[in-house]
Image (cartoon, rainbow, N blue to C red; front, side, top):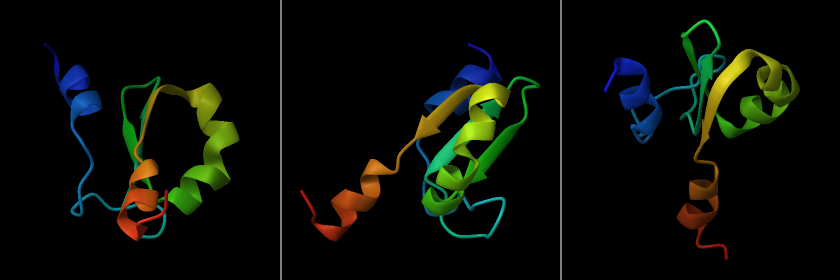
Length: 72
């Protein structure tokens, strides 16, 4: 198993911060170059269209925001 696969499978946690604003990250984008970017929900939505063409994999945990507020 290589580092890329491990990174894609690793859950995001409170230590992971958005590369744009520093808020808690809920989305990890693995770019075609192999680099990774972390985004909060807001910035993931703002950059979603551009990420689609540049990302090899997008790991999205934004559903956790609904779980943490008790929403169903």
